[in-house]
Image 1 (tube, rainbow, N blue to C red):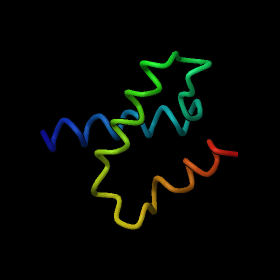
Image 2 (image 1 turned 60 degrees about the vertical axis):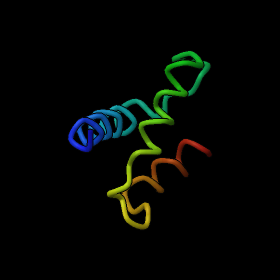
Image 3 (image 1 turned 180 degrees about the horizontal axis):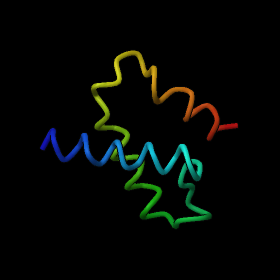
Length: 60
């Protein structure tokens, strides 16, 4: 399961870096929720060094 989570997070982060955070207006509620669930499993990002800048940008 960790291998699948790591593959999923790399794919999602790549998409976020290229296209922005998948908000529900663009991709629908189910897909936006699935992206959030994948991000919840991103345990290897100690201190949110990689994720924090992306989320701050998406929030703004």
